[in-house]
Structures are given as structure tokens and as C-alpha cells.
Length: 450
Image (cartoon, rainbow, N blue to C red):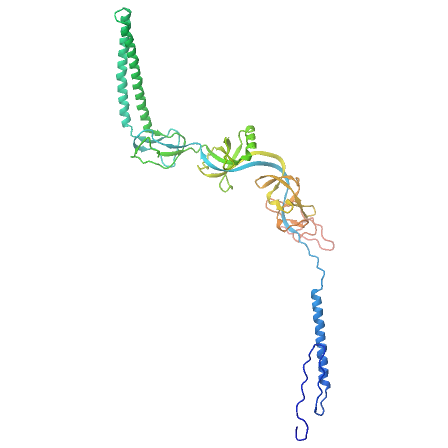
């Protein structure tokens, strides 16, 4: 209290509101100073109440606006640019493909047939030689001496034979005159036969010596390419050696031995009976580039039970020496040709839930899923057994963005002109042809010439 007896204790502050819409009644001021009124705090609390109510209404309205379902706008479907191809009838080739190995018709390891010192060689490594060309020379002198000895023995025994024949003629005359016994004539006849045998044996020795001299001069047995030299001049070579002097490989003609599954044998055998010259084409290891063309020569007589395949041999002229011995190639055997059948490019064929299908382009530039049945494949084309006919247009590029009934815009490709032309007013600006019908109420569009 002050000196006048008044209470100087400050009035208690009003408590904060306990809720958003209601507040506790204000405490009564005790000993308020003269001139102060209680209407001001009450007016402030009333104003705060309305602010909270308005904020709550705005929050509820924003929430309703966010979650209230709105009508979706109709999307504008743009035409998908695609490439197309037209179905046409063509000739489909039935081709059997198998992995093969280039095999020479003849691979000869040239060996010496006699023993002796190798005097010289008459070839260069990798050289193309013809049959009968000189390859190597073995020292012929020992065999020349043996020939002379055999010829001398033949001359000696030939003289004895002639003498025996002369005596036999004389004995026959004396026997007619009863001057000698019959036994002497018979013995002389046997002696002549013995001398004849000796002369034949000597003649064989002479021929053997001549043959050995021929063997000293070694020639190529086939026409082909010689490989690396296996024996150098100066070495003593023997007929029993398995090393050989050089290997000659025949390259023209050359063959390819390839394999096919045994399931192809019946039709293949039937075609071989009707056509003896089935064409075979050899491709490189990656099966991209053609190397040579030839004909089927023969079919093996047994099936390999471990692999279930049969071997075939094809012959190639190999005039450009493109086929190299023991090279791996892919052989394509043309079995037959089916004429005038519908064919579709493999780029248009899709596999999915419906099965094998294509996107068929309709006249209104929409596509439909068309299920088809395919047959054989020839390169980039497949035979169509059912589902398409000649003249149908199918999508080849841009299928990833398509669905049944989608709108498409055909774009020209290199070598593939568009089958249909959008000559209406809906074509994009700059792509409308000159004969396009303008939209009503709009100015006709003009095309710029390149």
C-alpha cells in the first residue's frame, strides 16, 4: 500500500486462451486505477477468435480442393512416325546351313623312296607347282653303279643262254641221226630254261636299278602349293623316315566338308536324286561375306551317332584361291526354291502374347495387331503361310511405341517409299503436299521448293 492507503499490487495478467474458439472469462480487476476500462481486452479476444475461424475455413477449403476428383482432360494422341513395307509375292529359297572345314582334294607328304644324300631342292616355300615339276634330287651315283652291275650280269647271262640254245639245236640234229642219246637232248633243253630264268632275273635287277635312279629325281605328284621345307639339302634321307621332304596341297579344285542334322537327310536324298548339281555357297566364319560357290559332291554313308549329324562334301573351283585348307566356313546348301509365295521382312515380325504378329497399317493410318503364321526364312524375308496377302502394308520401324488402333505417320526411308500419303489438312506444316485440302477458314499453306 502507498501512503494514501491504496493497494499498489499490479493487477494479474489475463491468461492465454485455452482453445481456438473459446477462452476463459477474464479475471476481475481488483483495485483498478481510475479511468481504466475492461472492454479493451474483451474486444481483442473477440477479434482473435474470428481470425482463427477464417483460417480454419480456408484450410478446410484448400484440403477439399486438393482431394476432390477432377475430370481428366482428354489427351491429344500424336501420330507415331513409322517405317512400313508392302507385302509382295516372291521366290523363297530353302537353304540348309552347316559348319564346315575347307579340305583339299589331295594333301601329299613328299617322301623319298630311296636312301641317300639330299643334293638339292627345286622349289621355293609356298610356290605353286604342277604335277611332274622337279622338287628334290638325291645322290644318284650309287644307284648308277648298281645299274651298270646289273646290266653286266644281264649281258653275261644272256651269252650263256645263247650258247645253251645253240647247243640244243645241234643236239636235236645229232639225235635225229642217232648220234647221241635222247637224254642229252632233254638235259640241254632244261639248261636253256635255266639260263632263260637267269636272264629274266638279271633284267629285273636292271629295271630295279633304273627305277632307283628315277626315284633319285623327285617330282611333284599333284598340282598344288608346297609348304615349308622339312629337310635341308646335305642331309641323309631314308625311305623309312616318316618326316618327309615337303607337303604339297592341292588347291584347285578344293572341297568343303560340312555337317547337317540327320533330320534333313530324307529331303536332301530326294533332292540329290532329282538334281545332281545342288548349289553350295561358302561364307566366312562370321557368316557375313560370301567366299566361293560350288556344287554338292557326295553325302556320307553313315550318321555320326555322337552328334546326330551327317557329313557332306562340296567341290569348289577355287580359281581365286579364296578358300584356304583347314579354314572354318559356313556352308549354305540350296535345297529347293518355292515360287510365288507371300513374304514379309523379318523386321516387321513380332513375338508376344498373341503369338507371332505384325502391325497391319489400315487405310485410315491406324494399325491393327495381325496374327500370322510363318514358314521358312530366306535372308531378311520370311514366308507367310497365313494372316497376310500381297498388297498389305506392315510396320517395320517404330513398333516399340505402337498398340492396337494407334495412329501412325508413315515416314519415307532409304529405298522404302511411303505406301500412303497424308494429303489432308492434318499434315504438319511444311509437310503438306501441294494438293492438300486447306482447312475451312484458314489460308492455304504453301510448300517451299528445295
